[in-house]
Amino acid sequence: MPRRLTLLLTAALLVAETPRFRAVSIRPARANGEATSISAGLTGKVTIRHATLRDLIVWAYDTSGYRIAATSPLAADHYDIDAKTPVGISAARYRELLQSLLADHFHLKVHRDRKTTPAYALAIDEQGLKLRATRGSRGKFHTAHASLSGENVSMQELATRLSALVNRPVLDNSGLTGTYTFNLTWSQQELKQRRPAPEPAEALNNFRAALKTQLGLKLSEQESPVEMLIVDHAEAPALTTSSE
Image (cartoon, rainbow, N blue to C red; front, side):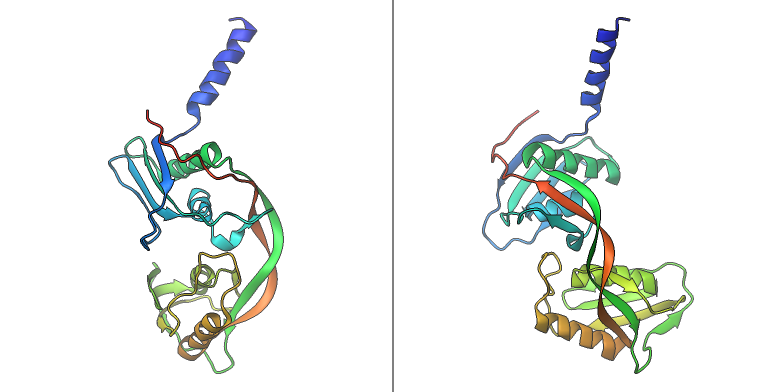
């Protein structure tokens, strides 16, 4: 086979293998206070509601809000998106589709880098630990607006869950190796964990006080190197509907 034809066939195969949604529709979100959500059922229909670009990046790259940094502020506009996928795709394939959507419609360009960022160290409070030790092997959580409960969870698992709530890395410095069951409630309902800005002092202080009083754990401020997803470029999408 001629070399030129081989190269053309190889390029065509690479283009064909690039995963993409079908029948993509991107519209401004309706200003009705609808909660941010994403749904991808077994029917091949994808429904995204009231999502910002930051929300989409979190989902597409399976990361946390605090791990996203940008060379310029990300737009806070909300979008409703509908699309179609092949039926029965894996979670990893679905994330690839979202990444392609961001590249095609938002012209998103990102790279990864390790940066030192504000963090918390999770440790036992001076008043003593108040968790109930268990011997289960499978940890699980239940989260509500102002409560968090855990069953058979390790301290590392708890630190990871707390990271999502306080929007910063939480490092397990407790020295505990067992598993625990607990219930935690706090008075401030909204910690705004999806926002990149530092948490409101009152909300965060209420949460840290509840953690200390109810679980005997404390969060101490420190800095830690963390792998970040850096947004180099992004644009507002063309608000049009494309079909198969």
